[in-house]
Image: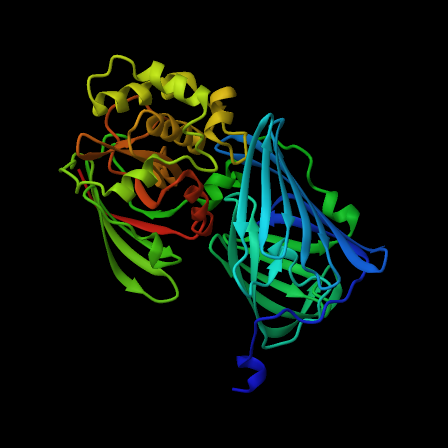
Length: 473
């Protein structure tokens, strides 16, 4: 194999500061979801050349019968070498907005997250030798892209507010025909902790097609075509995003919500890091190639004593985080009031669980990452919102708690879900505030656990999984 295919380019190719605008339609299968618009505008400030890029993404879809709309606006200011100087992102859904602002310095990134009057600030050290980009999805825009090169980029994950690394590999050339127009493209594969994508790029890095797992497809279109087909339609279950991305299941669950013991084989897991085992959920990898297949045995009534937490583990499971304002006065006061009178930690868990279940209304049209304080002040949301709020309240009264994400059997299949686990009276207790305190049945399979931000790592799993029911009782 020639050097052109094996060379690792740790620095980006030579940038070209070029103006432009293009549109893309977004779909999942035959279902048109929205559009993406990108503009690039060169600027000169004194003697310094810069590039300003603006990306707007808008999508509307149905999720379990509820209409969900999302809008994301990204504004990047890049220097002559296309290194980010500033980044501003606005995310909107159901009338609520979150804004993330980042200022890039030589050695650090200063980040602010705004949601109403709630502001979170973080300083992120830039790793030595990092090749920074503002938005990984347009990392190669205005760059000369060559076959066989691999680029490693460090980018700000605007959801987790952490610096993460992505690898982009140029794998082949391909002539792509869209709406009668042929394009000579370079096909690239992108991998990051939360995303796998394939892109078809022009010579200057402009994408004409992108496919993001689980099959979300963006194709180059005229403005008119990108904006067409987006009118509201009557509900069609076959176009429901949750249904389209649900786990493909062989077999069925005979008593949903009441399963105490389950053996399930799950295939299509992208990486071994998503295969977790503990006293309640025992997992065994049975095949590993491009993806992982694992067999899970879940005993919902197994709550044996857990190993004592170390001081470091306990501190980590009680700590505040980007989405867990554990020490905020409103969180602390609510937690103490809800847990008042509880005799022990297990009783506090049940009291907080019941309070969240009874005081937060499940509403599926909010497509924003929200913090515990935001959910407390606006008590509606989805499973991840109630799990996040519960975790903050539990930590606020001294109960080590982690947020879990995975799948659960609901209605007629396995869907993606979030819940929590608390370490109380020497045991790990599962807590699902979407239901009243009681049995958290064995149809929950977790792929991540930890701080609330870890929920979003499961984005890499959605739409990929198949499962087979081996045993249930």
